[in-house]
Length: 141
Image (cartoon, rainbow, N blue to C red; front, side):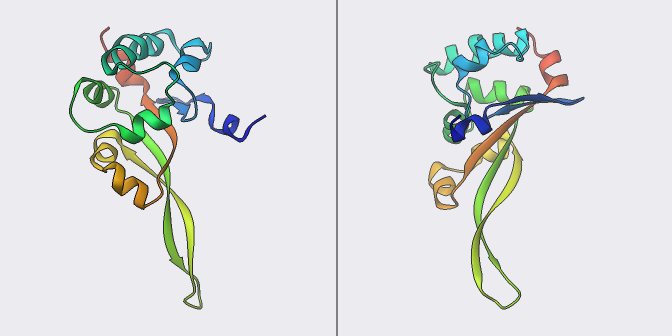
């Protein structure tokens, strides 16, 4: 098992579907734990419109996603949230500085506003994509 397998999962709770960011779109479409409607949205609206290679990971797609455009609007409609880790400097009790990863979650609108340069500067690592079940249910194909 590779280290990337830890970030390949599909989980659900009462209101959301969570996808591990190391999954490729191709793997998600073949995964039996992913609902048919979500697979259809991925194929018809995300892969086709963005002209993405099915081997693209969620991590790389959302890392470079910019505001505006059809795919961004689809993501807004699905009320996607991006869970990520970034490097922050913390001081201990004695004033010594230490870099640590801090996990944060942002709506897709706010996450996409960050430029790739800003994300690289703070060491952003996309970990998880959360999709609202209610928004997915209301999404018309």
